[in-house]
Length: 392
Image (cartoon, rainbow, N blue to C red; front, side, top):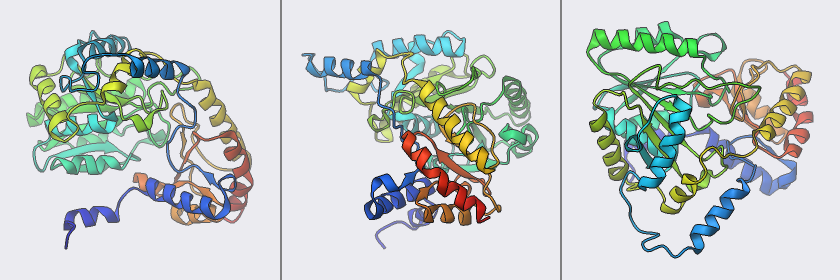
């Protein structure tokens, strides 16, 4: 057999998000794009800010020796300095450029960090529901993802996490604002969580890292604030990208930011920099580094996503769907009428509506709607959402 048994097994559980996205492509070919309502994937429909194209053109036209050549594996020093200044504001902590490692998106950053801290057989914990690529990321480096059930309102269940702790726990992944629920973990909850990790580390003698996955940090609504983790817990690494807030997911540009107070800081920085290279990325894309270095604080108009959120929530609430209104991201995570998410998603697909069943996020009984779509998709889907609801 040409393909490894391990990969064949992983293929069986590969991303339901991608499967629904591919199903959508087939439906569009059959019925026409305007007759399919595809909410399957978090692919932003808002174009990048005009400033992005201006800076891109500037660097494309500029005659810079070695413009397309290698740079230090951690990225251009001036770009890292610019990002460090921005992260210092976000995290209420003085962050040095040495703690910024430019990566190929948040996924590249996550893999570089996990490879740096996982010993073979270690566990990585995450709260359900979650982005299931985390399972593959942990597996890439000999680790195992363990999913912990959430508390009410999708907050972190601290007691459940504490029961799962042991000397083989290398890290906890926190995703806030949260995919797929749109939840923002409260500062009070995070402080209690950090105290629990300190207790656990004292018992086991094992340093536990928090890896904060924050590509949606800027996509928040109604005055919501995402708490800064650096002041709360010293062994924190933030991984993020510009995919969502600048609408450039295909450009694969992001970074890891390491808390300057982290234990063994120098070794951790050097390890993530090395791993960025040896897992195959080598370095983040040169042109994109230069562009985002000049766009700290810029983003698409988040009021557009708030408007889409409200349009979708108002429509589904009127029909009778049960959900928590998201405080951030561009996802809605309603309960599946009847309780069977797979059956309900199949029913929606007959109405040419593409969403992702909750089991794809380790949360059966729910389904995810990505509302980063054109208004006409939201408006046109409402009769189908109503028809499917009435069948259950």
